[in-house]
Length: 207
Image (cartoon, rainbow, N blue to C red; front, side, top):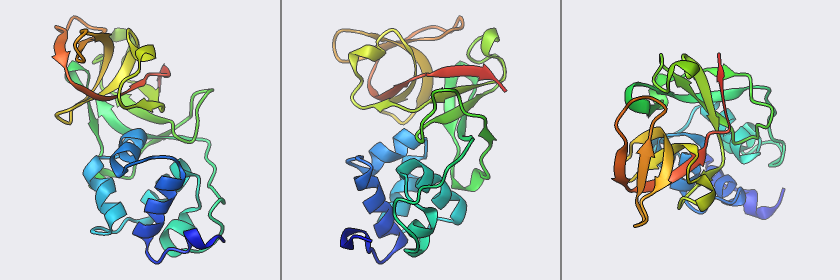
């Protein structure tokens, strides 16, 4: 095992895995995997430990062995494999997504879409919050962009606003650096919103 990966604590190893995976900040990684930012930051800075189920999820996302994250055992590259995708939150009224916190696990696991990656996560849809066609379905996403890139304009995306809200909306540029957000329902559009990050919805399907 390379010296760079001989870290003393689980938090050290988690930070190393995140950097190795190409995420510049803890916030970037948390957003990409659908984990509440404060929860992940506490796990990485060592102010709060993380349990085995969370290590398994981090391991799958960062492509490292969960045993290495927790105990420093095994090979760094011995990434766990999975034929399922974690559901990291729920989409309710107004297309507002609520991400699960640490105490709300265990998290649901669903069959992945055909083009899923180790970074793919899902959001459960409550009722017809995204329109009747998506009643009680699952929204899948993975490729988080911060800042928002032009290829996401006009697309249905999972969107993170600067005030911490997470929504599922169609993005349209307002031309001044903000965005107008539209729903698939009759909800009024949200105008001139500051978008912190966005990820294109890659698939929506019934449970």
